[in-house]
Image 1: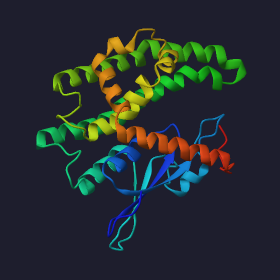
Image 2: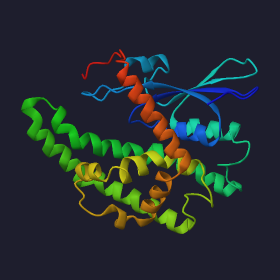
Image 3: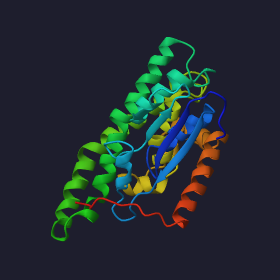
Image 4: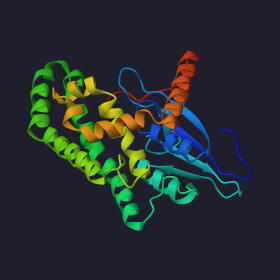
Length: 263
């Protein structure tokens, strides 16, 4: 984005197929002055590059650097929910995404924690267990498949059903098409990755991971409708096209990232 006078500037460290995209959408919604540094996963191991450790000691994305216009020491933020909380508290001057009352703000804060603390970890466990056979040593592939499939079917998939049903009911109770109140909020922003991107924009992949052959659009109609709304949001579409172009340009430039060994 083009800079405005006396505005703080933001650098987003963005990793493909990660939790980073919703931070970019947040920046665009709030019309902040940002730039994006793109990192690409290894196509075989799916690990992020070592260069991300230069942005933050954990080597994870998203990471946001804030360059203050008043000359203060720059600030680095990590963890999606924390980033969203900080940005909304300090930069949503027009209250575009900020709830109208304190009770709704508490609900937003809850969803910021629920999305990362409960929902996302469960989905990653389902994903890893679904591909465990592929990454296991040759002689252990069969037993690994039996164990991981048993864990998913015996525990994790039931927890995932519980969370999906909970979220669908929350949308039904709210009755506005949004998770909190009658407009977009931080709750909608953070839910885009675990619900829209991971599930409803990836229905065939979900069937492979969960072995659930149900029609999820019919099973969770309110989540499906919410996901459709997100997918049609003009700002979300704009940043998605923007990143598709940036990733394509980066790939064509033959970037020289370095990666950790799988083990």
